[in-house]
Length: 183
Image 1 (tube, helix red, strand yellow):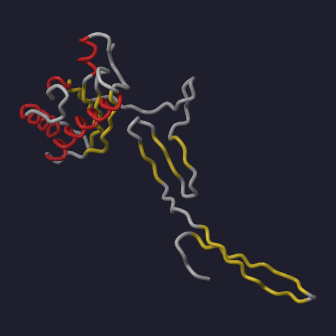
Image 2 (image 1 turned 30 degrees about the vertical axis):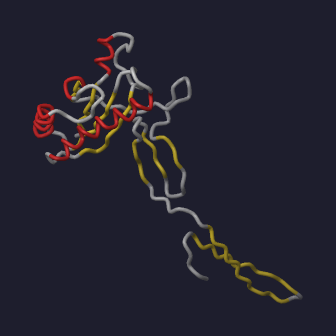
Image 3 (image 1 turned 30 degrees about the horizontal axis):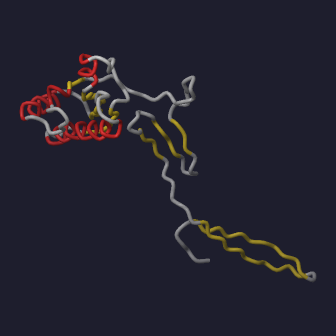
């Protein structure tokens, strides 16, 4: 029996030929990936699990009426309006915003943070997803620089509005970075 990448199965088969019992060995190798039991949360807030046999599922099996899973979203301990932190269509933080965020991360008594970027619906979905990701990563960079633990960075683009995108005031509320404090 030789060891290969994957799982080696050895089966002993008893064969009867002309009144003689012969033991035959059948070697079969199944190549696959190694499963490590784990739990993770996707950027959309859905918790998933995988068992060591490869079975996978949602952390919470509750479903909405349309069949989509009910995913978690914790309460934000801070919401920063993007208009106050970033120039239009930009993801680089101003010096004042960097200082304000650094103070927030130093003073907040949390073991880790989840940072989520959001936009309004003015540009295309793909553009808004990329912009919200870059903005969330800019905020996470400040957190890491002051020694705060960033558990996860999420980006939603225009997909999770808190106000109506049909008005200027609503779009302004939707352009935000939310910070969830863990423990």
